[in-house]
Image (tube, rainbow, N blue to C red; front, side):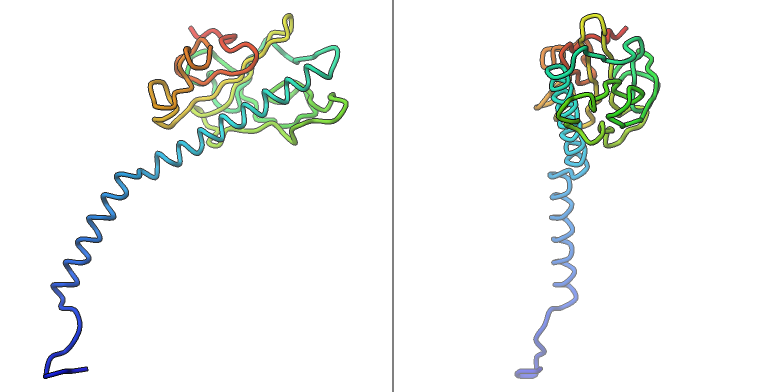
Length: 190
């Protein structure tokens, strides 16, 4: 529509300037927010939640089952990979998640709890590869156990703002992995 012989609208130059400004702002936004880091933090939060749930289930098992059977305590089991998270100690890969068998990656049969298993299945790491996986080790003579996981975000790794891997934070013996259970540090890292 013309008014006084002039068309209303944007010129090509004005559109290009607006597009350039939007491109710069979106680039800055992506760099500031770093969505990949937020995804790594989300997976780390899942790891912390998973290992807490397993630890709580094992505590329920200890309180309700007698005699306690921690399973094959001569082997370190990992859900993937050939070494303990954050270390070089060898482990046996086992991604069986059944809570009704001592052949799972956690060798405790949670279905022996009289009220039933608090977990439907043992969790697997969100990535579950050679680097990011869970580990379980126990000592049947003193009914102690350790669960391990690698953290991948800058926030949760050693030295990060929410560091959970340092020995001063988790009480373990491996500064490069999160260790929990009733005996963090049971797996000695050479």
